[in-house]
Structure formats: C-alpha cells, structure tokens
Length: 237
Image 1 (cartoon, helix red, strand yellow):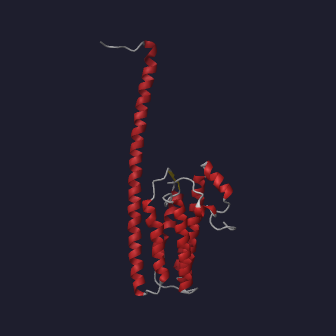
Image 2 (image 1 turned 90 degrees about the vertical axis):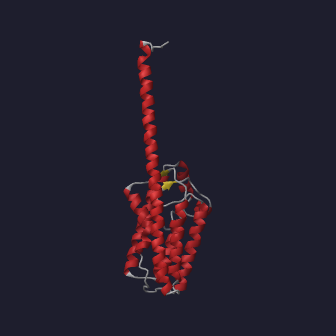
Image 3 (image 1 turned 135 degrees about the vertical axis):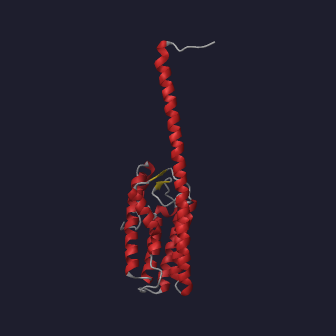
C-alpha cells in the first residue's frame, strides 16, 4: 500500500526535505571544521614542544660552559613553564585566529628563540637578575594556578577568572613574564637582546589588546574589567 502527499502539502514536504538536507550539510561542515581545528591544535602543540626542546638543549649546552650563569638556567625554567604548561590546556570555547593576534601570540611566546644566549654586559649582579626571575616565575605560577587549565597561547575565551592573582590585575601572567625578562636582560644586556625584548614587550601589548577585544564580548568579563582597573602594572597599564 502506498501513501501520497496531498497536493496542498507538497510545498511543506519539499521544504522539510530541503531543511533536512541543509541540516545534514551543516553538520558535515561542522564535522570537517572540527577535525581541521583538532589537527591544527595537535600540530601547534607538537611544534611548541619541538621548539622548546631545541631551545632548552642549546641553552643548557651554553650554561654547562658557565654554570655560574643562573639567569640562563632560570630562563630555560621560565620557558618550560610558559610553553610546557600550555601543551596541557583545555581547548577553548572561542579563539582568535586572525593574523595580527596570531603574530603577536607566536612572537610574544617564542621570542626566546631569538635571545642571545652567550654572555652580555652585566648591568646588575647575577644574583639580582636571578632574584627578579624567581619573583616573576613564582608570580607567573600563582597566576596560572589561579587560572588552572584556562590558559593558552592564542587569545581565547576560556571562561572569566577573577580569583587569585586576577584580583589585582587583569593579566597577571604578563606581569610575571615582564619581571622575568627584565631580570635576564639586566644581566645579559646587549643590542640583540635589547631589540628582542623591545619587540617582545610590544607584541605582548598587542596580544593583550586583542585578547581583551575578544573577551569583552562576554558580559561577565566586562563586569570584571569594571572591578579590576589595570591590565598588567597597577597605576601604569
């Protein structure tokens, strides 16, 4: 026995079939897009691990020739915290893949690959630079502990966090990076390192601006901005 669709219901049936086909096409596109993003995520994390390993090997080889250079050893530790921990973060709800954000994020994270590892001019004693690096590292760890797994390299919405270090400034991890970099630069000063860190600071500012533009779409983050006035350095920025 066969059934027929009444003539008056034919447009509705055709529309339902079209909607069903469109939904299937959209689901397939989302599946392909999800797979592509997953592959990019895996490739990015493997690339980060490789670059970190190469840098750590070169820096440790340099440090073994002069074990008194504590700032060089601490630079490796800081890089491992910054990049290594990001390899285990959760995938964010929304991420900024635009070229400017990508360049600022990659340059601001992997700048250490361009740092001159051989000794430079000591503007302050090694112990002073090392103390600054330790201070920055502990502050960075406190900030990351406040975030738990809600951190990464590219600007992204991983949820609004206002606890711990985030009660004082909106981007406390960048404050930790800044203190670490200043500690190393003052002990290993030179034209190359000055240019590298100058570019690093500029890239971090761009990174913060893009991150805040993304997060400001979230009402919770807008309320957080109203409570915590400064981005990185209280009273300045």
